[in-house]
Image (cartoon, rainbow, N blue to C red; front, side):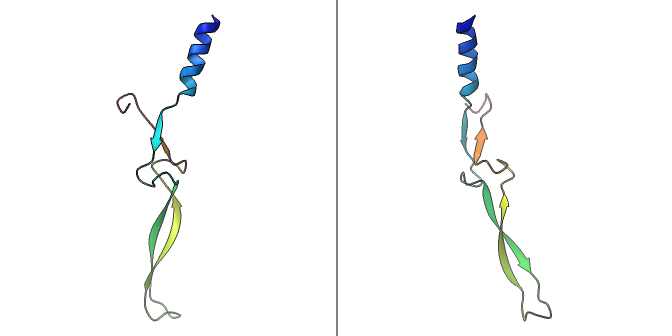
Length: 69
């Protein structure tokens, strides 16, 4: 019984994953945010902010399905 248990535990530890192709494994993206012209500014501009990657939920790794392996 212990051989089967060890085999199953080894299979669970072998989580196959690859680096996220959207954020290049960083877990976040830099997104452009347009800022409009207003009373304090002469013209609008593009600002940036960091957001968590939706594809990998910030982990930077994607789990592979059976078809992807």
